[in-house]
Every structure is written in C-alpha cells, then in structure tokens.
Image (cartoon, rainbow, N blue to C red; front, side, top):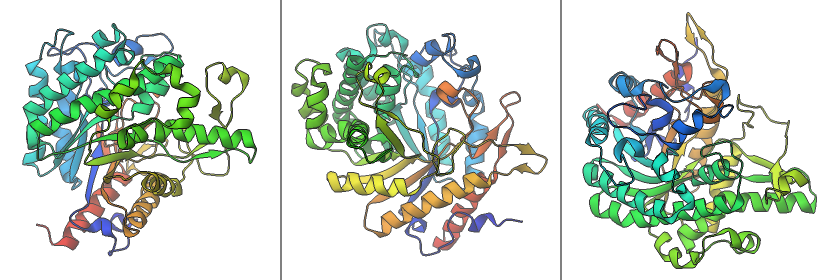
Length: 463
C-alpha cells in the first residue's frame, strides 16, 4: 500500500511547506464549463472552431465538457476535501460581454460570483485569468487579435470584471499563454481561429500585449489590494544537433517563446534579433505602444510542461516564414502528449529568465502531465503522474532554496477536461471525469496532492 502523504514532498524542511507558499489547482472556462449557449453566453472562437470539420479530434467540443456550469458546487467540495489552498479559474469573456456594443450580461457575472463567494467561504483563495483563449466570435468577425480594437475591448471587459469582483480576487492574470494564442492559433492553425499567417501572428502578439498594458491601470484601480500579472509558457529550446543552423533555430525558438513577450513587458522593447527578421509583420507605429505595454506587474506566471527540441526548418516550414521546427527526441520518458518528462527544464527556464530580466515574484501557474489513466474498482492509479509532480516540485523547492522568489504552484489540471485540439483524448486531471456520466473519481495523484497539503497544514499547526 502506498503512502500518499510521503509521495510528493518527503523533506519536511522544504520551503514549499511554509505558510507563505500557496498550492492550488487550475482549470479554464471553455475546458470545463459546458453550457455554451445558456444564460446569455454567446459564441467564442472555440465554439466556432469546434464546428469546423476535422479541427478537433473525434469532432469533440466544449459544449458539455465537465458540466462544471451545473456541477461547480460538487467540484469545490472536492477541492475542499483535497485541502486545496487556491483555485485558478478563468472567466469566459463571451459569458460576460454579449455583443460588440459592450452589452454586459449580468447572469454571466452572477455565475462567477457564486463560485468565488463559495471558494472564499470554503477558505480557498480565488485566482482569476481574464483571457484563456475564448475570444468572443463577434470580435473575431472584425479581425480578432489582428485588430487593435480588440485590445481596447479587452480593457473594457477587464474593467467590468474587476469592478465587480474587486479585492475578492487574490491575483488577476490578464492573459494565459499569449504565445499559444498567437503561434498555434495564427501561424500553425491548429488552435482557434485556425489561421496560418506570420503577419497575423505578430499582430496577435502585439495586440495582446497592448491589451495587457491597457487593462493593468484599470485592474489596479478596481482591485488595489489584489496582485496583477500575466502568465507565459514554455521551456528551454534545445538544438537537435550541434550544427550552426540547428543552434540558430533553437535560439530563435526560445526568443519567440520568451523574449518576444518578456522583453516588451519588462524592458519596453522587442528583441533585436526578432525585429531584424519580422519587424515588417508588426503593426505600423507599434513603437508608440511600448510604453503602455511596459507596466509594473506584481508577478509573472510560468506554465511549464516540457522542453522544446528544434531543428532548422525544412523548406515546407520555411514557407511559413519560420526558421525552426520541432525535432523528435527519444532519450526521455514521454507523456501521452508525446512530451518529454524533463523536470530539469523548469529550473533551466526560470534560472534563465531571472538572469535576463529583473522579474517580480514568479508563480508556477500550470504544471502537469497527461497519461492514459484507467479506472478500476480500486480507483485510478496513476503513479507516473505522481512521479511527474514529485520531480517537478523538487525542482521548485531547489529554486526557492537558491533564492528565487516563487510564491505559488498550481497543478494542471484539477479535472480531466476538453484538451483543445486533442478533444477528450488526453487526461491531465488530478480528478478523473467520466464524460458520459460526469462521475468524478479522485486519482492517486489527487490523493497524494491532498495528503501533502494536509501534512503541510499539520506541520504548520493549522486548524
């Protein structure tokens, strides 16, 4: 019989067991809520993208997902049973703002209010992400993130949400993974809105950063006691070979993942190397926006799953105006997504961004793995996920001991959910969801996570 209390953090002296370090779980609206057409919610780009033939595995969609819209009380009760300290959820923009005329849907705000109030009542700290990829379709109809107006509309939406919730929220994140929105949605076409255009990609990058900059003063005004920041994603980019071309490709891949965002956010400029390659793809007069983009943030969120191994692009990829492509690496264990289990990449990434930029506090906003979980009469035994968390938490502990200010860690994900282009094929949850019956079953990893937090509270003398 395994001992879940000991599975994730054995060292009782770990700094992660101190009271000022927060452990949470994370989800996003489109991936779990379902009820995509009720109580005034309008289409997002993901509702529309899922209707395109061949866009999503098995023609899946988020129409039902985990039915969290109707089962949120059950889900919060599960969080409470696992001693979860914080819950990072996203707000669905098209559930809150119903039209391009800025019509506010009070039912949408009320839906989130009941969740947030319940979290606070249960002693679970609410963290909000304002944009987790579900752009209202009415804005995509006028160009979406290619159109500067979308940045202005985001600021309005952020103002409405933060006026409504104010300081009830521990931390607001403007954007989750703007790289994914821009590169997977606008260059590679595998995420909504399904475009393949370098100019659209760089316009999307810039206008999301501009939206972040426009929103931050409003967030600070409406929620002066909350923390405000943005969440970026990625890992180290490593060359497939020692060739000059592959090393150059890896450098460009890394800069597009990290420096393309951190440089304007922290330093007020885009990286010189990327400007040499792609300046013509940025909006005209983009320089005038850089002072707006460079706002003081209270934290940078980091989402980490794996490393990137890249090689110089083949001619087919080069036609998409990129100089790199993913390379196959075989020496490490793979998750169900085909991603390397590479915990040392988390340390490499955070060490480098802290070396390159004067960063505020860092929060690990997503970390987790998909595996092929099986339900048995004894439950869901997922030892590989347990080991994944254990290895990555050990790295977080090392980073904190080294002096890096990491204040929180959120496991992705609380529930198995709609995994974007993969549909329901891939499971990241601490809690298994039977998508036919909506039955929830806590996995071994969830039990281990909850028992670690029980141990933390016992160690700290919490009641």
